[in-house]
Length: 237
Image (cartoon, helix red, strand yellow):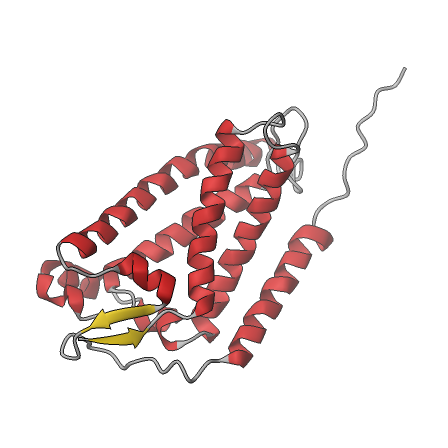
């Protein structure tokens, strides 16, 4: 057995950032109020914006990032994934994300982005409106409301499956995935690794800069350029 560097800092920051934001969004949306956290809904919006930024960055990093962070390295065909699931011996042969884990990541990112973006178009019908509230027609508005209030339940279900998979790897396969996502390193057998090892000495700083730049530009457009001007709500006497 030896220790191998797998997960870089950007991947780990995104992973744990999603964990913290999803927990906070649940608390701020279902439990907290202004008596506990002043301007709770505003913080809920801020966390949603951060979530969108993390998704955009992770998508960029999946193209420009380190070897094991790239989608081209771990996303495989459905047939390959099915064969992987049938062959238990293959479970330890992937140093990075395995084929099933790859599809899990795609689903989770899609649900998180859908949840966050739909929040831009809805209102709590009391004090707070999303940046794009009122832009959509009635039917599209109803769809945005439906998505924001129901996708989160689906997201929680997939998170539960994700935790079960991590538990299986820990208990049955004796593989500490959680610890690896904290330290960035995995303990592996040289005979188990079926892919080229990632050299921590080679870090794509240009890729990091590009990913950050794309994320910054996208968020500037989403938050500052594209939103319609706020409506002037007032009463005429």
